[in-house]
Image (cartoon, rainbow, N blue to C red; front, side, top):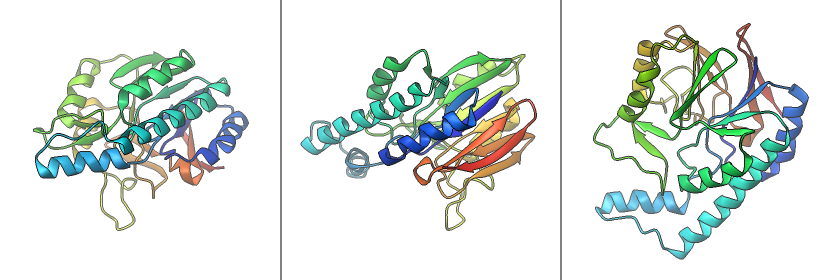
Length: 254
């Protein structure tokens, strides 16, 4: 099975035609999208400011309502482009894909071709795909957020995955947040991932882990006997291909 792996679209509507052509040209069996259709904006800034000031974030600001409407349009255009390729796809949200409820509602228009895999799993061609989007944080006292941003404590991810620990099928993790590796380093060589995900790899032994968010990196790494892929930023025209049967990886661009 040949996977087309992408992430970090980041509102780049000008890339949609190239994206569609690249999918049709490479003829994958399955699309995987690791999140970040949108970029952090006014909503995220309001949420961060409210946390610092010890108050509730304001949902009804006119600028926030306008940003939500723009985001809904981008969600629709992005999913429509993927759906029209005719290739089935699995989708998880990124930390900036908020409010999450709107993404879910719009994606329903493109089912069953595009499936929402966030906090869920599906068995596909003798592999188990497990999805968990959003930013995963180490702080176990952190309260999850899905309106202004998409953030969760690591404990929620582990709890959701644990009942699939002993699956008979090889596991493929689809995340937005990367583990620590050579692929989550930013331009100043600092890790941007979640170290607890490395512990998850050790505990669950997935065959493959796919993640986004680290925009400056593209490639494949081998972490605790698990293949880890950062497909690169779709905004920059980057994506990756992976053949599950032969473990063949290709870093691509359009």
